[in-house]
Each structure stands twice: as structure tokens, then as C-alpha cells.
Length: 104
Image (cartoon, rainbow, N blue to C red; front, side):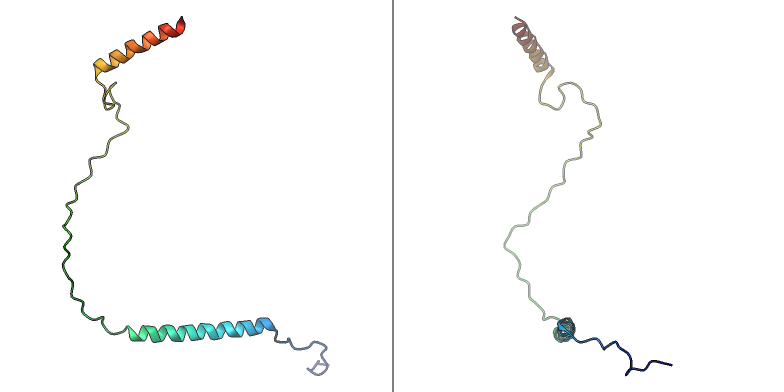
């Protein structure tokens, strides 16, 4: 025997608050799409021609950046740190004097 709808013990699902929220969401999406289309439809024409006023600001001449420094290249002692070899020797003598005083 086949069960028909009258004899089945299960009932139809009831529409609850979530079904109402889904319906409101659907209507909001459809309304938003309609408004978006109406806005897009207004902008189909070409925009009006705008006259450009020249600027009083002086033009800036940009300079090229200096060449990149090769960090892998080995440097001579005192090269690039602003010290001459004489200064290096002088610093070395000062260090020796400090070591002698510290040792006393």
C-alpha cells in the first residue's frame, strides 16, 4: 500500500522568522540591483567636456637616483667611512694607550 499525504504522520515545514529574513534579503538585493541599474543608465552618455586651467605651480625637474652600491664588494680599511689612513693609524695608537692604562 502506498502512503498518501493524508495518512503520513509528518507535517509540512512551517515558515518561521528565518524564512521572513530570507525574503527581506531577496527583496533588498533585487531593489539594490534595480537602483544600481538606474544609476548606471544615467551615466551612459559621455561626460561633459571640462576645460582645464593651467597650473601656476612650477614644474619640478626630477633627478636620477645615484647608482646602487654593491654591498658584496670588499672595501679597503678606512674607505667609505670618512677616515684617512693617517686617522686610522692615529686611532690605533690611541687604542694602544687605552689598553696600557687598562692593564695598570
